[in-house]
Structure formats: structure tokens, C-alpha cells
Image (tube, rainbow, N blue to C red):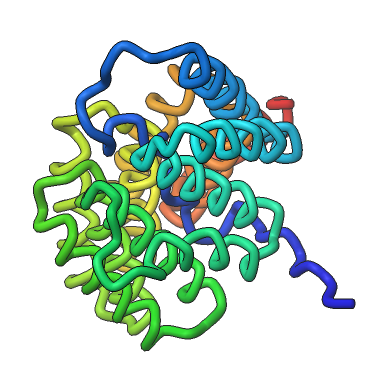
Length: 266
């Protein structure tokens, strides 16, 4: 039996690909009864995912996938497989996440929306990055950029992956450049969770550069977004990083203030 990987420590690299892929499909048409069923299940899954109820999200996405497959709704089939891959990533089953993504690329000319394929490629890159397979991670970033061409909802996520790769190689100026470009790309859209991720990564890079003022600003921006979205885990993370940034800046009392607030978040 292959045992699952341990759950990632969410205090590490930012969680990417929080977007729901509804915007990556084609223009919506009036749904039939089966499609309406699938949409409702997908919406329930989205809510469960945001609340960290990953088993529930998995069950709803699987049901939605089966219904969409029964009516050959190709864009939604792709979206559900992508969303299932996100769930399996959170459950620390990367091989199952790869399985759903690989299905999308199994045909010579995949019949799915380019933006969805860009998102899938980006998620494969993230999975390889987390598995310390950096050459493959870089290759899938490049593949995602071919599908995206900087004009799709995943362009910011691809820039964040570039930033992570540069940060790993200690190319901090380059990493910060990519992270800041991601902030710009995401600011113009509705992907607020991913925008918070971009600010958080920018803060981590600034912290590594010992630019405490910029780090505090970035973590504060991430906190403001996460508070509006009402995501306790991310709020706690932002408060902890604000505490670290203030501590390194020599503001011990402010650091303790943020640590105490983080402990109070449930």
C-alpha cells in the first residue's frame, strides 16, 4: 500500500490555484436539467473546498464530473477534473492529482478550453515543484504559458510559479519582479484568493531580502483580502507572517501583538 504524503505545512509556500475554473470555460448557455444538477453540485464543492472540507468537495466534484460526462459537456468535464486535482493536492495525494490532470493532456490535441489547460499545466508544475522535481516544474510552466499567452485567468499563477522557482534558486530580485508582476496581473481580475497569495509571496521574498517595511506592507495587503474573504487559515498565516516581519524589524511588542491575534483565530 502506498501511504499518502503528510499534509503540507501551510506556513510554507503559498497555496496556489485557488480559483474556480468557471471563468475558463466558454460562454455559458442556458443549462438543461442535468447540467443544472452538475452546476449545483459544483457550487457545493466550491464552498466545501473554501471551507477546507476536502472530502465533501471531492464527493461533489466527482458527482458533477459523472453528470457532465453523461452529457459530454467538455468544458465542464475539464473544469471538474482540474478541481478534483486541487482537492487531491490538498489531501496530499499528488499522484491522484496528476492522474486527473494527465487525462486532460492524453489526446494529441486536447479538446478543452486553452485557459483550462493552462491552469492544469500550472497545477502540474506546482505539484512537481512540491515534489522537488524542478526541471519538470519548469517545463510545465512553459507549457502553461503556451496555452495562456498572458491573456487568461491563470497568467498570475504562472508568474507566481516563476517567482517560486527564482526564490528557490536565491535569485531574489528576479523572484520579486515575478511576484510583483503577478500582483499586477491579478489585481485586474476577480481572483482575490490568488491575489492574496501573490502578496504573501512578495512579502516572503521581501523578508528574505531584509526589506521589512515592504514585507509588512505585502503581508498586510494579503491579510486585508483574506479577512474580506473570511478564510481563517489564511488570516492566521498572514498574522503570523506579520509577527515575524515585525520581530525581524525589531518591533517586539508589535510582533507579540500579531502572534496573539494569530493564536486567537480559530
